[in-house]
Every structure is written in structure tokens, then in C-alpha cells.
Length: 120
Image (cartoon, rainbow, N blue to C red; front, side, top):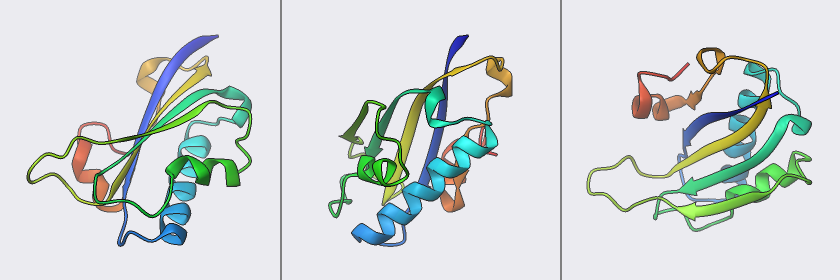
């Protein structure tokens, strides 16, 4: 079984805990479904949030999805002038037999503009 990484991001409409949880859950669910993964395939997940997001920890949304035995960590994204606001990014390390070229990276909504080269 190979270790792979899968990326994803979502731009929030507003900094509100319930909205953040809903959007992060949607992103994680999409990543899992598109890559045919279960929580057993997850090694760890790194979440980052832009500095304008303060309402909740993105990792808490993963716990609400039932991802309870996977190491999770949250960090703040760099504060770069002109960067897209209100974005949560995910870098998940997974076990998968898929080749790197078959991993589906998920960028929802406006976040698709962040990585047009790999967004699905």
C-alpha cells in the first residue's frame, strides 16, 4: 500500500462556525467519495485557514464526520496581500493503491481558481 497525498480547498462565504463546519464537511466528504476512501485509509490531515477565519477549528468538522482516530492539525495560512480570503485548505495523507496521477484533488466553488491545474 502506497502513501499518497490529496489536496483540497473551499472558500467560505462568511466566518461563522456553523458555515465553516458545513463547508469543511462537504469538502472532506467530496475528497473521500471522489477518491473512494474511508476513514481507515486516512493517515493524517493538515488543515490551514486564512488569517481572517476565527470562528472554529476546521479539524472539529472532521470529528463530527466520525473521523476520530486520525491525527488532525490546524494551522494558519500565510497572510499574503491579495490572496483569496476565507479559505480552508486540506492536505490529507492517505494509504491507497491508486497511482499519483489518479488522485482526485478537490477545490470547491471559488477555490477552484487556486489550483486550476489540478482542481476537479
